[in-house]
Amino acid sequence: MDIKELISEEKIKARIKQIAEVIQKDFKNEEIILICVLKGATFFATELAKNISSPVIIDFIKVSSYKGSQSTGVIQFDLNISENIKDKNVIIVEDIIDTGRTLTYLKSYLEERNPKNLKICTLLDKKERREFDLESDYVCFEIPDKFVVGYGLDYDEKYRNLPYIGYIE
Ligand code: IMP
Ligand code: MG
Image (tube, rainbow, N blue to C red; front, side):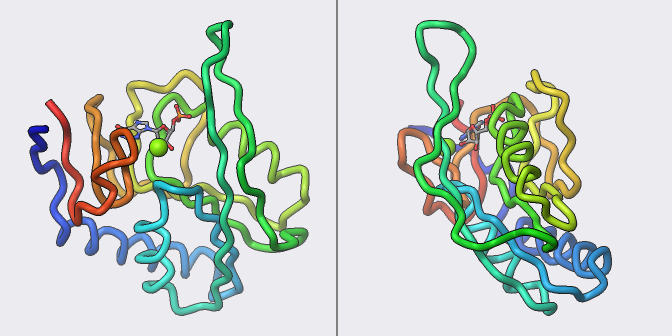
């Protein structure tokens, strides 16, 4: 498979550091629960967490979306969070927003648990692909409509371990 570099490891790290500083300021050094959306956001969530010096709790959630016989995608839970997020500062950490379906669903699901704040932080945003009215509060990089891999993102479960973000032609 021919993979071309889109964003280098250095640029990713530098940008995550910037976003971590913005988050820390926004939350005034209060405790934050980062909810990492498995599997893609793992590399991003750990790097983000390492760059936040206020107290951080890390939790995980795993959802999968599959297309049934109808054209509407259905979302199901494979793993739920273990923390009680009521009255807490919560940030959903995602690898990429494409149509926005996954996060629209996740956001309303978590909102029902009455967190004090619920924000979205994404590594990548493919804005032009959006089908749902969803905005991310923190975006590291807006990218064009290309299929990307690396830094946690997969193609058929492979290439997550690439240290940079590349695209498949
Ligand atoms: P959405 O629900 O359409 O926003 O899709 C988001 C999910 O689709 C992400 O969490 C990824 O798992 C996957 N995805 C979307 N675009 C890409 C891509 O370019 N590379 C790898 N995974 C992608
Ligand atoms: Mg994926």
